[in-house]
Structures are given as C-alpha cells and as structure tokens.
Image 1: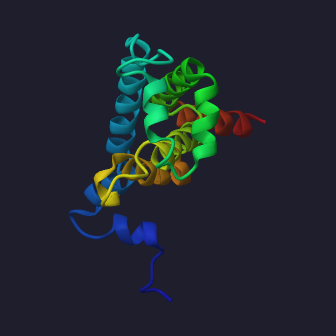
Image 2: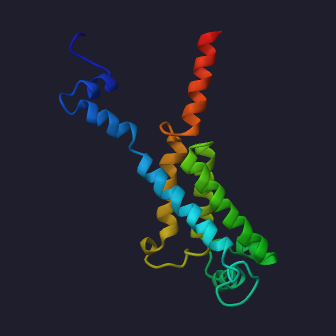
Image 3: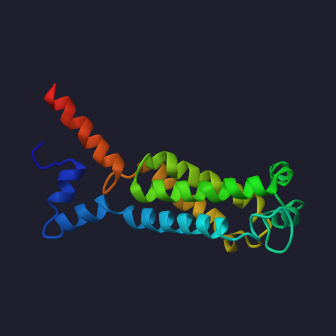
Length: 175
C-alpha cells in the first residue's frame, strides 16, 4: 500500500513542522527529568543540612512529623517502623532523594532512579499527605504520577543510559 507510512515516517514527513514535532517528541520528558531531578536533590540536601529535621524529636523533626501523622496515615505500620529509628528514617529519605535526583539528572539507571522516586513519593503520600483533603492539595500524589512516565520511558536522550546504550551498539557492530 503505497500511501501508508509508519508512525515515525508520518511524523518526519508531516510538512515543515515535521522535524520540530519529531524533536519535541524526542525531548518531551527532558523538562520533567530536570524538574524532578533538581527538586529531589534539593529536597534531600535540605533535609541533610537541617539538624532539626534529622532529630528524633522536637519542632520540625522527622520524629515529630511521623508521630503527628501516625493516626491519619493509610499505612500506620510504616509510620511505626519509621518511629523505631526516626533519625535513620530521616537519613534514608534524604539520601534516597539525593540519589534519585542525581540518577534522574544524569540519566544513569534512569528507570531505577524513577522507580525510587515513585516509591519515595508513594511512601510520603500514604503517610504524610494521606490526610490532605481534598486529595489534590497534597503534592506527593502528583509527584508519584510525574515519576511514572520516567519509569516507563527511562531517559532516552541526553543521558548516561543513552551513552552506554550507544557504546554497546558500537561494540556489537565491531564484532
């Protein structure tokens, strides 16, 4: 059938705007990657540099926060687990946020990093922001949804993963 084209060819050949549309599709997830990466690095560093947050008790501490949300959480057993060692939980969240953010920005193990970000966001939604009413006022659910396209697509452009994939392709061609 001579008049039919595959999807990629149809986008490329869609007139003057074809190249622009192709580039837009190719780079569509990059702003999301940058936003989530920067935000999670910032959030992690903010926690690591705030001695009040990393304390077991007191105003602004992770321990006080967990105790405050325990009875309204969707998963009180998770909050109970965090309350066994609030400082450790605080460090785990903060270091996890930094690792996820750096992995996302670099595009290194991008799907793993995005899954980590989704897991952190899911955990925070089910614990800290579960009681937010209406639900759309809580930002953790929105972050969870924002991570999902990156879990599915990874970081196909401007990423360490893309560089590594290209190296593997070159090595296979040489064989």
